[in-house]
Length: 609
Ligand code: F6R
Image 1 (tube, rainbow, N blue to C red):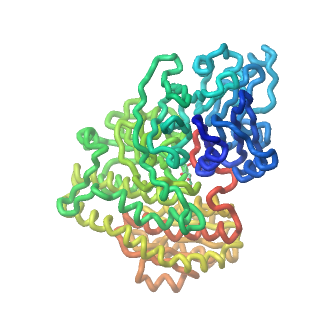
Image 2: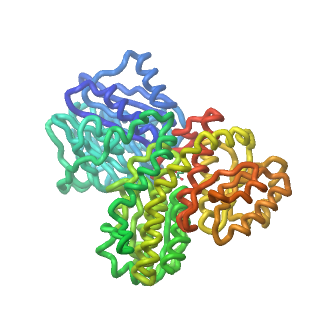
Image 3: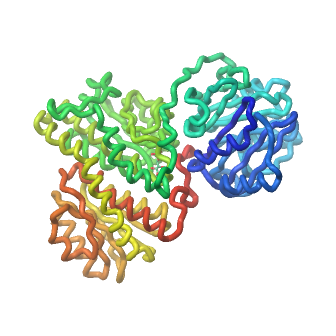
């Protein structure tokens, strides 16, 4: 949502913090701001636009000095994208300066109270209200003022606060928005995620909800907002610099598409035993009995994660014969869902911080469901809220458009499907066969990626068309949804994904001469039916781009362009079929001149409902 980096130590910190902020820019990029304290005075510089705009502005003002400071990239929630609404925000009484990720839900009531006390606001943000409240409560102890203010607040926050009167102290707190504290030698870096910390120290701890940390160059103290001391667990960060750098690629999205074979090998490593026909999932082993007794599964997520969850729905129902349904977290949560005995909820999320998914998970747990997480970010809110789970292990995903996390999510859900199937009715031999096929997916993906230049060429032919359809059936209906989402979110082309059969119930009216229709038409149970749908579009002037199984010569007679994928069992085909669609979206955005890794209006992890 928003990116936070703060530093206290002995170094001049402006450049050091900005380097970290660039690594977090994927979290939000409407505006950026920085503040330091030098000789007891706070200086704030902020601007709309990217971190690069902030650097320009800093140069114009001759830079800022200080060995304590904070900086922020914003994804606007309250108030438009303007300089005054950018963070950091200051108060008008006590020399307070604050950055914030999240939403203060009761900010209107708090603002009225503060206005009655005579405070004058300069922005429309909820964040400025919190800065003023802390300033109002400040009585010589920043930590105590932050704790007291947070006891009055409802909503979500990851905040860092400093005060001119305590010029070597940072106070940070969290509820719902992630915050990590990197512990160095006489210096500390506080950030929304480890990628902004790793260049300085590999030791860090994560703040828990309702926890506050006070940091000075001499050390730190952690407590709750009720001032009960707590001891955090300082751990080794599991990130390598290489994972968060572009290397020879032009964009993170491109890097992450090409990383998928390697990422999937990591996802599968140690979890499959083809000889024994067995799936080994350490993260769920304590719940094996309950999982076997599951009668209904609700998979929940948003966006790309929901598409993966929908493939999971098909997979688990098909392989394990358990009634399964995939639902938007945002819908599930608010519709008074029925949770019967032996219901399992599976929350699917790359970031593990998506507010809608988290809220659905908590709702399901409160109603008695067992909760599993299929999450990438270790120690994230969803990972911690679930009873058990299976991590994706695909490495940090930085491109805003999710790619390797999608295939990782589908791979983990395949493992879970096989795990449940094997504990119920699937024979060892059948499971062994599927495991062997699954283990070959990374190699087969590599073969598809070799045809990147062809995908670009085909994309060039259609990139000027403003309306596209993506159609698939069965396992590849969600793949069609994902293909459409990828195209629209980074190239801003209008694209609709749907089950191929649904097209004739209305959307067929959209088809006009030259409209691109992407069909996922690999070999499978519904192949013939998809071919009929292709004919229906073709006879109305649509242009057909097909994703088909290697060796299918017949499809060339109908399609204008074909991307081939290797033959695999139908249930594994989405992991391959999605790859040409990811590449096509990537090339369309590049050709149209868009910022692939930072598409307009988006942010990587959506921590507000
Ligand atoms: C699309 C995309 C989003 C996310 C969605 C859920 O490319 O990235 O649709 O999939 O916001 O995010 P996570 O997986 O972090 O819960």
